[in-house]
Amino acid sequence: NLVQFIWLAFGLVVLFSSCVQQEPEPQRPNILFIMSDDHAYQAISAYSDRLIETPNIDRLADQGMLFTNACVTNSICAPSRATILTGKHTHINGKIDNNFPFDTTNVTFPQLFHQAGYQTAMFGKLHFGNSPKGFDEFMILPDQGDYYNPEFITNKGDTTIMGYVTDIITDLTLKWLKKDRKADQPFLLMYLHKAPHREWIPAPRHYKEFTKRTFPEPETLFDDYSGRGTAAHTAEMNLLKHMTVSADNKIYPEVADELGIKEPSEWGKHVFRQKYARLKPEQKAQWDSVYGPINEQFKQNYPAMNDSDFMRWKYQRYMQDYLGCIAAVDENVGRVLDYLKESGLDKNTIVVYTSDQGFYLGEHGWFDKRFIYDESFKTPLLVRWPEHIAPGSRSDEMVQNLDFAQTFLDAAGIEAPADMQGESLMPLLTGHPEQWTRDAVYYQYYEYPGFHMVKRHYGIVTKEYKLVHFYYDVDEWELYDRKNDPFELKNVYDDPAYASVQKELHQKLDELRRYYKDSDELDQFYIEKYKEKGLIK
Ligand code: SGN
Ligand code: CA
Image 1 (tube, rainbow, N blue to C red):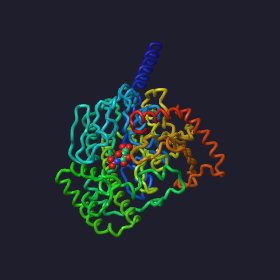
Image 2 (image 1 turned 120 degrees about the vertical axis):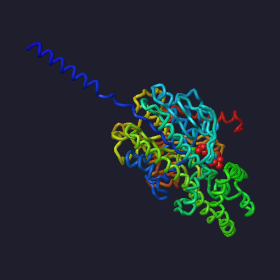
Image 3 (image 1 turned 180 degrees about the vertical axis):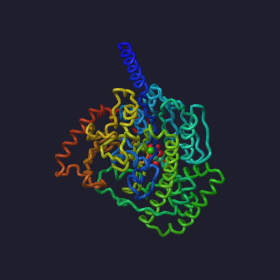
């Protein structure tokens, strides 16, 4: 009996331990990071369907979480990307603007993923000249890249691919997912669109459709900036004054000359010619078949247009092309999401959709970005991870592109370096908002003097208020009441009604600058860098 009992006990132990052994290790998630260039949240229907339907991007909101208060730390392309990769503010990672090189001694999160046994790949627009570190494979556009027949820098040499950039970047991404990826390792895949960056050139299948449409105008199209400081008045991003009819609105330079239109700079015509010259004969024919009649009509209508008619015409032309670019982004995101589903990869893949910053779609009469004001400061952010993130969930917390690196590292169980400056979004994503303590974010912008002439500034933003300091060739403070003045039309700095708010925000801003290790000395240090380069005297 005792022998029988021992055998039985032994059998049970073996059975139990084999069960324990069979329990699979939780699989590390794949990360698919999708980012477009200059994609305004106003042009994603999960945020607002006023301008366009984006059913594929919206799938991520339906099946995951949409952030209504996501923002960037510095609203311009290359600095945003440097912050995403390093998890550090601009003044720490050193990538202050689009011109200074990215310091490749910075540790980036893809390098950490690679070391931890992830397969890593990047396709599309990075914007730095330097080859990205930590990738098994990359194919990136040089600098801004081209919409048609783009060149790519790759780790196997450079190449030019015929066709439309958004389709091509997606083809490369899908090929990697389907053929080149090893099935037994998790992956980090960065799928980075050039679109809808200026000069907004859609695919032929979309410019036909979108040039027929008329879009609602923003309430602030004719803003005169009377309630704000100097910086809004001197910025060069007004549709009427600074958008070119040639490169931006696709009026042939000869037509512009014939009509006696003086471009903001001759460079608009030069860019038009350069982009048009890239097209193959059949692509030119498609272009002409759509923009030819628009030019003809413009020739007839322009002489009778006053400034506001011209502004309105420019806005429509702008939206037709900008939104046409987004139609292709949405379709292509759909192709990738379809493949994830079909292959079953969707179940354990964290999919993120975001932009390198927000963008003005005629609000305040503007295009471009750079400012701490909402349309450029905020950025779209949608995240899906089945069984971890509740479908259709929303978060209004103040999250930043600064947080992405630590979020991904956290999800993958990789330790984040102690000097990264963000916060993992995992508590918010997985339904534990009570663990989230941040109530204010820090912002800064440096590229001045430069394109669009947006003055240097830094500031603090809470859900209720925004305090901004413009410096260098001015010394001006602005304060906005985000709840009562959502369009940010009235600077209430020094308004006695806001005296206590002003005081409190100044204190908080000082604290944040200390917390993130920023200072007046560092602002000055980066001004000196411009001097060294001869960009300012
Ligand atoms: C180009 C654009 C600008 C834009 C910058 C930076 N002009 O210079 O309008 O602000 O890129 O954009 S263009 O006519 O040449 O397109 S960023 O997204 O790369 O920062
Ligand atoms: Ca950008």
